[in-house]
Structure formats: structure tokens, C-alpha cells
Image (cartoon, rainbow, N blue to C red; front, side, top):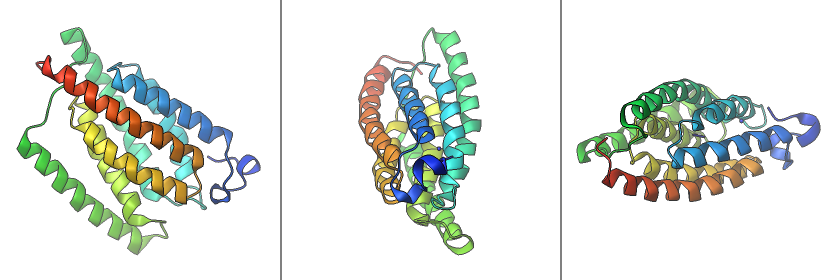
Length: 207
């Protein structure tokens, strides 16, 4: 669901500049999330293009959000899986139906995110020069959980995306990625919209 800065256009990620590739990646991300909220399988081509652009941006020496850079590679793979899964679900039901996790599964997801964030953040802090290792780790680990739930069509993915968006807005603003920070403000609104809309859809869905 969710980027190579050209030095000649931006002067470095932390220099406050805005570059064309970040704008393109952000635009692709916006289209992607709108289509996800509308439960359209066509969100996936936009997602694949977006994560490809963002992977190199996050790995730049003046950004150093290594967890986010690696996260984009995971997103590429899980988006391919999600595209296939959504198409199969649509073929079977005539639409992409959504469903809820049970209480035990929600608890396990929460514990998994917390544990993975602590472990991965500590690893990044110890072994790399990662900037903001624990907030960056939370964005990565929570996004992995949310993306898997999204691919499996669980409404609960939106609650996690709301938390991710809130943390990401601050992290990307601090790291001099203004377009991406603004994008995540928009993502936050879209996540709330998706959460409300998918809840309504789940009431009439059999999964």
C-alpha cells in the first residue's frame, strides 16, 4: 500500500528540496490507496510501481531509512500475491469481499508487531547507522502486518495503517521528505475512509 531522489533537482533528501520522482511515487501511492478503499484489483499495478521508486529513495545515504527500503521489497512480493488473491476472490464472488479477524487473531497481531518492532529496531540500532531505528522499525513491521491483512481482505488492516500513517508523517518530515510526509497525511484520511467503508461492506459480506 504504500520511494531515487535526483540530486540535481533536490540537493539531497535532508536539504528540504522536492524532486520529481518523489512526486511521481507519491501520486502512484495516492491512486493505489484510493483504489484499495474502493476494493479494486487495479490498485496493484500502481502499488508495484510506487514501491519500486520508494525503495531507492529510502536507501539514499542522506535518508538511511533502511527498514523502509527493505520493506518496499517485501511490498513488491506481497502485492503480487495480493493481486492474485483478490482476482481469485473477485472471480468466485463477483466482487472483492472483506471480513474481520477474530479477537485472538487481533491480539496475536498486536503482540507480533510489538515484538518485531523491538527486535528489528534493536538490530538496526546495533548493526547500522540507521536514522530513527525504532520508529522506522515500527513503520516497517506494522506495514508488513497491515499489508498481509490487506492482501487477505481483513478489515482490521485499516486500524494498523492509521497507526503507521501517524508515525510515518513525523518520520518523513524529520528526514526531509516533504512530499512523502504530505502523502501520508492524505493516506491517514484515506485509511479512516477505508476503515469506515470496509466495516460497512463487511456487514453484508460472507468473506
